[in-house]
Length: 107
Length: 178
Length: 345
Image (cartoon, rainbow over all chains, first blue to last red):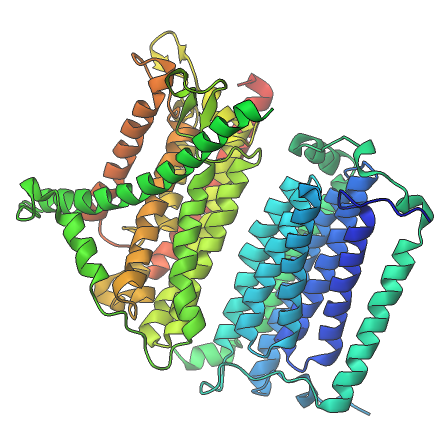
């Protein structure tokens, strides 16, 4: 594979960055024990995907990338709203933000 | 090095650094603010990718509205007041190590998979000089994607109703408070 | 290529520094104007001791503020407490960066190429202003939260809720202007207002959009937390709202941010509705004089409103924003869209 001297940020740069951000988000969702931080990590994952959409849209010469990001942002907003409402409702019952405290449906 | 690449690394560093801190540190208020920093870094990257409209939209909606909502919820739920927030510490030792190794493996796998898409790896950035102006995006949004647009509007309405229903205090409580 | 870049870079830098200092001076001037106008409305004299006609009063105020002790409550979060006024002030200055205040000028022939009188020309300029104003909300929220005091927190939450609510009407009034002008760059919107109808009435958008202008100014006043929408920082109700615990230069930064936000809203209203720097009698390159006159008029209007109208109660304020102003702005947008489509404005 030819290695060109990188004078401009190429598609691969953006895709690797997107992969790194997505991994950080996934790690956050799986490892953190605080409901708000879990929701924030989900937002991080959505953003990583947005970045790769726009990168593809730019390098393939289509405006589809930007349009779908428009929709992803909107859906993320709706999902954050409902997620936070759930967190508030849960908090009213058990005064903690630790997901391990909600064990009533286990087993 | 071209200015484009310098800017790319600068914004990428901001985005990755802020995102790492979001996940690693324990105060939720700081996490929200760091995520806003990450969004600003990403907005810079979008501008580099010739998408200024989406960059500004992201700041307005994501960083300006959704994160304010997060911040409000974090502030209002802060029950134990002595500590800044219920600390979300990562669990001890072994879990952390295994988690880090798995995360690294995941990142490397994703990067490898993306790098090996041959058709994309050889695309030269400046073969596509088109930059999409806002009227172009608007036209496609309201013509080809009109159905998705309307469906998203209904989705937002449903989300609003759902949130109000879930988070509202029950009527009996309200009448008791007078 | 280098021969013309250096003077342009120097001119741009000079413009940047000039605008920065001009904003600060305008804030100082506003302090004086506010106190004098308030005094005259209340039939008293206002500051007269410091300098002729009290003109050096803002200088005295700044010296006083700079020499006060910078206190911090013991239980306050130190990072956020220090960061909040910085965010407020930075957002206020940044929002003005895309506002043009004059036609292209070549500085009496010193430059080979004319440069526009604007710090940065972005083609999504209106959205930029909107975005940076949304960021300014964080300064207030963090100030209230990090102060760790009940008056601060209540004031901050109310203030930020108010700002977010009125942002919607603000945005829709902006959208109506976008429909009329067909571009998001503020410079192009101003240039769409050049010329006159029938040689007498200037082609300002305020004549095409009177309701839009009303909505924009009302939302702008609410956005900058000024009377009659200044409940969150009302002295009688909340001590001083979100900046209760701040003193000395941090307080000065909030103060500065509020006045610069006022100037920004007035400047944008001038550009969007009152024709910017176009005006009769003066040549094009002196247009910035007209711009200053129009902005000064709007700022006087701001001060006049503060000392004339009683304050809205918080629930009245929110009801007004959601139940009256928002439907009105939607109606305005629809009517403008119909006008553009069928009558081809």
